[in-house]
Length: 226
Image 1 (cartoon, helix red, strand yellow):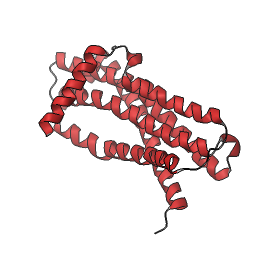
Image 2 (image 1 turned 45 degrees about the horizontal axis):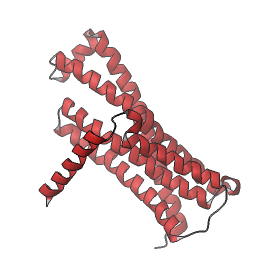
Image 3 (image 1 turned 180 degrees about the horizontal axis):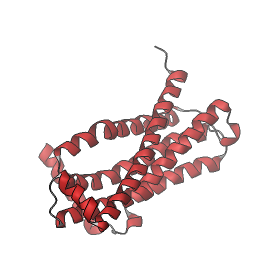
Image 4 (image 1 turned 60 degrees about the horizontal axis):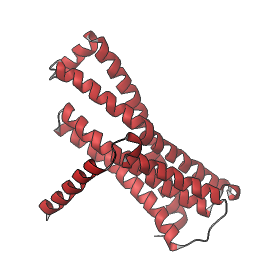
C-alpha cells in the first residue's frame, strides 16, 4: 500500500513539474497564501454578521486545530529531531521543501480562524472581549503571511548560499565553520544575513503559535465544560 501511494505521489509530482508554470508567483504555496488573504478580505467586505451554523463553527475549529497541530509539531518535534539526523546540506534540502508547505499552510489555517471569526463578529460589532481576540488573530495571520510570502524565500536562498560556500571550502566540522566565519568575508556576510532573517522568521512563527495557545484558551473558557 505504501509503495502504491508513493508511486501515485511521484506521478502527481512529475505531472506538476511538467505541466505547471514554474514562475514563483504561480507556485501553489504562494497562491494559497494569497487565497488566504482573499478570504479574510471577503469576510471584511461582508461587514455584517452571518448566522451561526455548524459549518462555520467547523471551519473555525479546523483553523484553530490545524494551525496549532502543525506548528506544535514543527516547533517541538520535527526541527530538533531532523537536525540531529541529517547533515547541514541534507537538512537544508528537506527544509526548503517543507517550509513552503508549512508556512503556506499556517497562513491558510490562520485565515480560516480570522475569516470565520469576522463573518460572525464584524469589526463594527466588536466588544472589548472580541476585540482582543480579533486583534490577536490579525497579528497571527500577519506573522504567518510574512513568513510565507517574504521571509521563507529569503531564508531558504541564504541557507543554500551558505551551504554552497561550505561545500566549496570542504567544511566538515564546527571548527571548520568557525574558521570560515573568521577568515571568509563573503561567508560571514551571508551567515549574518541568514541568522538575522532566520531569527525574525522564528520569532514570527512563535508569535503565531503563541496566539494559537491564547485562542485555544479563549475557546475552552467559552465552550468547554468538564
